[in-house]
Structure formats: structure tokens, C-alpha cells
Length: 577
Image 1: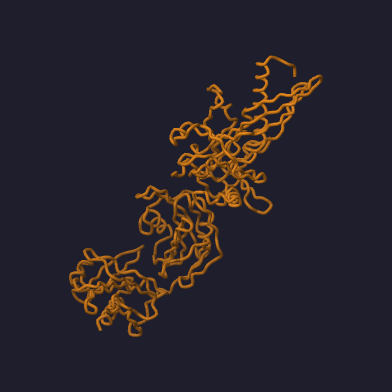
Image 2: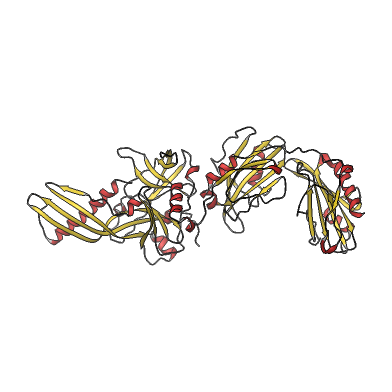
């Protein structure tokens, strides 16, 4: 190169820096979860020095440029407390390019001194950030995975929730976000040093799933348009969850890009001890577990256990994993489609009506047929996004309805796990027969409260602290108990006891139902229908002991009504002896 004025030299330095940056990029392509992934997609710029050794015929000189932008890329916030995910190659000391111009050659050595994470102006204003760009440190990096986590001193940041790449299927519609070509795309603005370009979003789809030599899903092949500078940006599904980290495009090809599968990111965070800083936790499946007394089994996530005493119901505590499993065995002539509509669109099973998630309901499979699906909704009291993944197992007259329910973010993070668990569901039919004849039963009197006389229950029956349906105007009972046979969930005896003589049996019975039962004015009867099956309720109020009133109630299918009436009469006699 020939010598020139100082201004000429500065111009050469600027053009050389831009050319080097382009060469580098060309090889790669309380906070709540943000509703707009663009708000959490950040512009990453590298500030450092360029040491240039220029050689050629009769030329041998050195040019040093300090405090200049030597590269840029993309990233996205994954935690409201300042953690940003990107590619390792975006923030590493970059390769040492050689630039040739005519007979002269420039060997360039680039050194990164500062990594800046920059937000859009809308985010800076909304979150009260001091400036658009904040200096970041590298919290963790893995060159083999090409992943890095940066940390900036900021809180209450908008972040993108992580999805589950193992649940991704070919054809899934996805958006790629990032900053291709950095500030060069802002062709309508003066390229000042602190200009943060607007984020670019390109639509596309997952075209293939690429595994590594161990068979683990490593990359998502995508059709989105990608360019230098997109590296490190998020690949999000249409629900706004990140399923990949954009990494590269295939050279000399059109519409073939690759994103690192987001579950690779989860494993990376775990190995670096950063998973505890994430808003939600990863769950893993345990081995198949048989619930013998309930005649069903499935693979449960680690740490989840059935807490329900009812033979026809399974329920786990949501606290360890932020999602809960609930299973109901029901008697119904309805089709799987009818039950699905009731499960999703009403409050029959869950307190929040939901909407079916399109593309999450494959056709039934297996023998007996198992149907899978998904739904979403919003809790009216908290406004929290809720998701449900469900399975319905068709056993003929009996159906088993299983579902995982939780915050949308926790469900999306673990989607493949809950769906694998539901797909493993197995069950056998209960006998559904009439209980043994009343005359053949043995009875045991349960201990009462405060030394009072208890209420007799059949020996060997299962019990749970559940009482009759509340009746208007009656105070809360002192004790409640339900008794049932393990093999018949359609016949239940329920009792409530009050430690007071202020309850008048005839008046209490009227509060429960306007229709009197066959035992007199202190008894009542009513009917209800549940999932296409008619049920009858027979009940009576009776004084037990010195200062107690007990409500004895039997719930059975309508076809067993005669037996239920006989049962209640016998039970009443035992309770008053």
C-alpha cells in the first residue's frame, strides 16, 4: 500500500475494520417472560484493537487501531437477572485474517477488550436502563458446543423462555431473530458508533432434525433466511419460546441454516452450574411406575409422587417441578372427542377453561387407544399463562384422563418429558361390580373427636378425608370421611359429623335437597349426571352419641339405586345402635 495523509490513513483503517468484521461474520451465520422475543434479542458488539502488519514489494509497516468495533453478532436474554446467551464464536478472540490488495498483504491480529450487550431503544426506556449498551463479562463458554453465556449488571430484564427441542417436529413454523450485518442494515441513518440497529425477524420452518454421533439431537435444520450477524440469535416457535440458537448457514446453499438445539443449551447450563439461575427447572423421567391399587402405571418425572388416597384419582404436588400430574378414571359412554372437549373447554376437571393447541393432537394409537393433545389458557385471578398436555385412554365404558398442568413456561421447558410420560400411560379396567351384599359386611367404629362416639364404616374399605357435598346454610363439620371399595369407584359412602346438637336433622335434610328420601323427613335424595352417566345421591341426618349429628350419604350409579337405598338403611341402623 502507498503512504498518504492522516485522513487517508484513518479512512483506510475504517474500511479495513469493516472489511475484517464482514470476513469474520461471513463464516457463521419481576420480570416475566417477554411477549415479544424482539425485546429480549440483543445486539452484541466487540470493542478491541487491530494490529495490522502490511507487507509487499518495498513495503513493511505496522498499523495499530485501538478502541474500535471489530465484530458484532446477536444474542438473547435467558434470565431477568442479566444472563445472555450467544455463540462462543461471537464473543471469542476472533481469527486472524489476512487481507490482500494488489501486491500488498495485511496480516491482521484482533484482540477483544470489551463485549457490549445492546438493547433496543424501546427496552431501554421501558426498563429504565442507564444506556443502550452495557459492558458484559463471560460467565461460561464452550467452544465445542459453540455456546457462551454473558452476564451484565441489570435486573428486571425481558427474557425469552426456553422451549424443548426434543419436542420439535419437522415442519414446525419458527422465526429467526438477530442483527444481520450489524449497523450496516440501517441504510437510512447516519452510522454513529452508539447506533443500535433494529432487530430483524425472518420466518421459516424446521426442515430436518440433525443428531450427533451419539444420537442426541444437536441441530435443527431451518429454512429461515440467515446472514452474517445472525449468529447467536434465538430461533423461536410461534408461542415465543426459544427452540434453538442460530449458528450457521451451509455454504453455497439456499435455505439451509442450522440452529443449536435448545436442549443442548440446557445441558451446557447444567454443566456450568448456571441452571439454578434460570426461571424454571428441567425435569427428567424416572422408570415406569405401577400404581397397583389404582390399576394403572406410567413413567413419572423424578421427584413426583401420587398423593391422592382415591383409587380413581392420581395427583402429584406441583412444587418440586412447577407442573402437576392429575389422572381421573371415569365411567362414561362418551367418545374420546367428547371427553376432550369437556376436559379442555369446561371447568369439569380443571378450574381454567382452555383452548386446544393446534398441531398437538395426533390421532389415537395403541390398544387400548390412547389420544394425546395439548391446550392453553389464562388464569383469571392471576393472569398467568397456563398449559395442559393430556392423554385419554379408552377402556370402553371406563376412560382414564391424565394431564400435566402448569405455568406455560415450565410446561414448554419440559414439553417432551411430559408428553413421553403421558404416552407411557397404561391401565386396566376396574371391575365396576356391585359391592358385596350388605348382610356380609363387617363393621368397625372409627374414633370420634373429643372422646365422642365415632361412625361405623365397613371393615377393609379404603378411606379418605372427604365428606358429602356441602349443603347451603350448614356450618363446617368437625370431621369428614369417605369410604369406598378399591375395585369400584362408582359407589362411595361419605359421612360428616358435627359436635353440636344445634342441627335439626329434618331442616338439614331440606337444605341438601328439596326431595325427601325413603327413610323419612330426615333423609333426602337427588340426582346428577356426570359425563353421560346418571348418579343418585341418598342421604340422611341422624343424631349420634350425646351431642353429635352425622350426615350419612351414599353416591352410586342410577342402576344401583336400589342397592344404595338398602346400604343407607343398614348404615343408619349401625350408626344409631
